[in-house]
Length: 238
Image 1 (tube, rainbow, N blue to C red):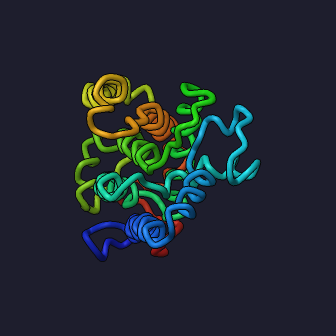
Image 2 (cartoon, one colour):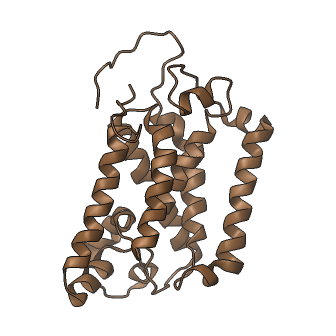
């Protein structure tokens, strides 16, 4: 069952993730530059690691960096932007699924974003950091229910529940198709053409698209929403 929304009208699990992201950034700001560089090299997602480049973290980081890169951000602006998007889309999805399912979805979509980034940038030495791939996964997940009649009511905090659309229904829905196409076009535009004007390291559009489509395709596996009026087997607040 979805979580209570005691602060900022957001589920507890979303607020907890926001606190963790902020705490990691603050902690990094308090250590020396050399130590922070080690943290980045050991935890950021770096394609060169998989092409034989020896980096801090060793072989363990080949697995863990698929997830640990989510907690790192380039600067305060990067962090605040991702926190804003997480609060928006995390709240929509977090009201519908359990806290463990939400965290699992965040991890899986973040890893999917990293996987596509790796496929498109094999042996790249530049680190990729940030939660935007995972947050894009929450956007993709939201597409599966927000366009149904009761979806917007649920997204805005209403008690109504709605089912999860099938992928065929998503493709038939003009609003869902528009959202998908728009997200692809925006990422290709900013990632390939305009990204260098906004960030020094560019925009990891591959991670955004990988996470988005993972959330879109896999959300039903994490979804435990009940039809409107149906009893729930898990009334606990997470």
